[in-house]
Length: 202
Image (cartoon, rainbow, N blue to C red):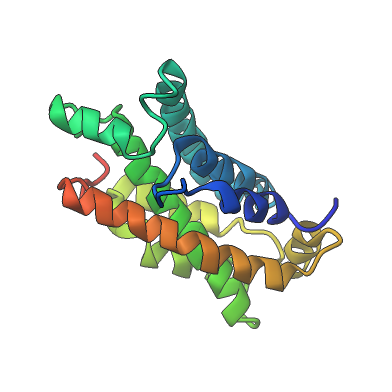
């Protein structure tokens, strides 16, 4: 593998914003898609999170593909739903963007933990990231399921070797967190502005 598992996402992030500073739908979703292979390296521990992320990307992509010029900007599909009062539905794109952003928050937190706590096991890294991000939005059943899955996290040293490829893994991981986190913060800010940032899982 040329570079690290982060290389495609780092490249893609250069194109996420339009000239006028708005987040573009397709480039943003592509960055999210490009980070999914990292989750494969976790095996069973991340299967639930991965399918959740994949489902939300597909939902947003389907909407984008239905009218690429109308939905060129990421927030346009949410605005359409807010106007038609369908934003809070469980299969809405607004819901999809919210959960995709939360799952990405979890991943950024996980990568930060890997960078900061060299002595933590992979299971500790995952559990701490989960409790700081997704846990408060999940119901009891979802959080129990995820907590059990996190215990299946792979050996940390092996994991780092697998995702490292031929690149400088820590530098790329840090760059990913620093560059991607502001996009996620912007998503939350927008979702707060339309009153959608605090939806919980049913």
